Length: 424
Image 1 (cartoon, one colour):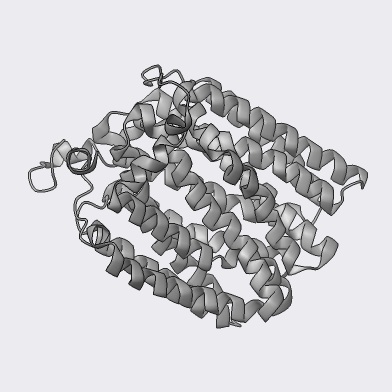
Image 2 (cartoon, helix red, strand yellow):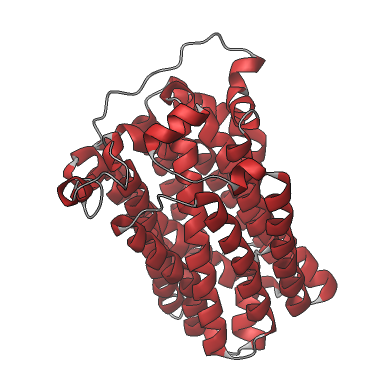
C-alpha cells in the first residue's frame, strides 16, 4: 500500500473511483445492503408517520427507536460472537428473511385495519432482533470482500449506497403514504426479499472463523480490544454522544406537521436532506479519501454538526431547515468514514465481528436512544428547546473529547498499514 506522498497517478486509480466494484462479492454485498437499507428507511418513515397520526404523542415517536435498539443492547455480545464463529454471508441472508416477515406483518395488519401501537412495537422488536445479528456480520464482512488497497474505496461506496437508499426511502415512502401506509409495507417486503437473494450470491470463503473456547472473556473480547485502544474508544464514543444529543431526526414529523406545515411531501424532503449531505461526503471520499489530519477533522466536524443542529432547531424556514439538515449530513459523513476505517482495519478478522458489535451498539444506541431522548425531552420542554439543547450538548462533547483523548486529537494517517502497525 503506497502513501499519498509516493503514490503515482496509476497507483491512485487502483484505490479510488470504482475499484471496489471490480470484485463480484462486493457488488453483491453492495446491492444487498443498499436495497435492504432502502426498505428500512421506507419502513421507518411510514411507521413514524403512522404512529404520530395514530397517537399524536412525541413520546411515542421515541418509543419506536427504543423498540429497535433494546434487542441490540441485550444481545450484542452474542451477535458479535456469531459473526466471528459462523459465515457472515449466511447470517445476513437469514436476518433479511426475518425482516421480510416483519414487513409482511405490517402489510397485513395495516391493510386489514388491525394495526395498533402495541403491535407495531412488538413487530419492531422482532425486526430489531434480526438487525442485532445482521449488523455486525454486515460490517465485519467488508474487509474480506476486497483487497486492502481497495478497502477505503469499499467503505466510501458502502456508505454512499446506504445514503442513496436513505434519500430515496423517505421520499418514496412520503409519496406512497398519501395512498396508504400498506403500500409502503408491500414495497418494503419485495425489496427485502430481493436483498436476501443478492446476499445468497456472496461467495467469499476467506473469513477466519474464531475457535476460542466459549466463555465470558471471548464473548466480550471486542469490548476489551476497543477499551485498550484510546483512538478507537475516543472515535466510537464521540460519535455516540454526538448523535445521541443531536438526534433531531426523530422529531421531524412534528417539524413537518406543526412547525413548518409542509405535510408528508415536505416530511420526506426533510428526512432526505440530511442523507443527501452525507451522500455528498461519501461520494467525495470515493475520489479523495481522508489520508491526513483525521483526528482534527473528526472533532471539528462533530462540533459543526452540533452548530447546524442548533440552527435547525430555531429555524421556521423550510429552506433553511433543509440546508441545515444537509450540512449535518456532510459533517456526519466525515465521522462515519474515519470511525469505520479505524474499526474495520485495526480489528483482526477473527475478532472483527465482536468489535463491530460493540461499535454497532454504541452507534445504534446513539441513533435509537437519541430518538428516544429527543421524544422524551420534547415532551418535557417542547420540541424546539429539546433540539437546541441537544445541539449545544454536541458542541460541548467535541470540546471535551479534544481534551481527554489526545491520541484521537493527534491522529493523522488512515493508511491501513499505518493503522495496523500502530494500533493492532
